[in-house]
Length: 606
Image 1: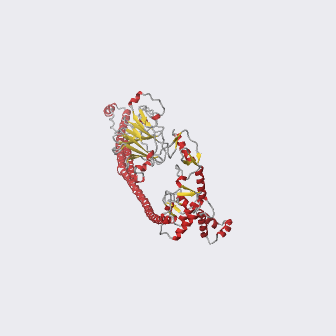
Image 2 (image 1 turned 60 degrees about the vertical axis):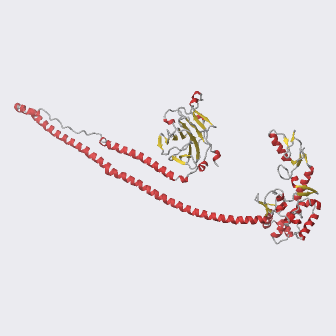
């Protein structure tokens, strides 16, 4: 027996002269009494007595099973590094798990290679039959029996019984009697104790694996975790306790910091609400002042002008009326004299009176007074209407400017860096069926180029194709809450657009152009930037400095924003809010032969 035991690597401190005589005698006695089937139990017991540290256990490279001295490496499969399962020998003499070597050869055959030995690289053709290694199989079986033995001498059972004894004042006999009752307390204790036993080897969990961060038994430490950093549970608990205290301190510090941030944020929200209320009152006062100013100008100027015009026109009409009354009186007087003259028989009197009555006086010239009551005030009506139109246009432009200022000021609530935008990235491809016949699409439908030479190549007609403009649309309709994509341009004659699918594609008028109707919104990226919608354009002050444009759509909110792409995105423009009634399709117009490319953002999302 001593010869069998000498095959192990005995820890140096057990044979040291300084070791106490009592420990030496204990060790020698255990050596003499150890049997082949209890060899692992002896090593485990030595570790439990703390005669061998956990790191020292890994030095035991030899074991005796059924009276035969073997190395642990001989019982391990070179492929899976685990204890052999159904050991199978191949013609070169090496042994592997039956399933492992079959999987290895299956993989080689998939790649049209001959079967070979993973250890010595010897090649076999044809594939050899596997031969069961009976000797190793018996050793492995004996080893497994030694591991899983569940009798009174088992270390795990002894320790479990001792733990049960410490769990309460009752003896083991009392526990046996109480077991059928299955009281909640007994059941809880039993479950707690079972949680402290290794489910694989039925031994107490006494070792902590630092690499896998789990509790294991001594056999696990010897085999499955033999190359890992391990500690006894007590030492591991002590180290983790220190980490726990540090973690608790850090947690309390973060809680305190977060509570302060919460308080500050709550106060900020209240201040924001107060600021919003004050801003609303201020703006309401400004608009009320504008209304008062317009009312005052109307009262003091426009209404007075109308009254003055009324006075002048009425005076002119009254003057004409007075002249008419004078003429009528004179005519009536002459008519009376003529009537009297016609009644006289005195021929001398008749002839003498005739010269003065023979002619009628010329009527006085009357000022032309229109019978249309609105005509005298047509000029002022027209002037005020034009003023109203100019004022409305001015207000619309200024309100839009104010909106852009407010939107720019609120950019902190929106993504500002490219990684923040990329979380909303969408995958787009060009639709060749919509492309004008002079456009060529390539790079997996991500690049489009105006190719004049393509005119010589016949293109299949399609109802969705643009026929009069060098335009193309994407396949994907966008209606998600937020969408972002990027476009790279080389030239300086291009438009980036978002359009409804029903946009006119055949007309020669502007309704088929991007931005030329209420069916599309576009950014013109020529020498400068301008945005268009419904045939109305706004020139932007920004000068192009990048060849890559980012488009950020907030479908539900009804806005489209354009950016020059860089690490810190440069804001160009955001549309006012619209109500989008159907999905929007990205589209492009090309004004020269320079290509436009849809950037592939799928690999940059995370």
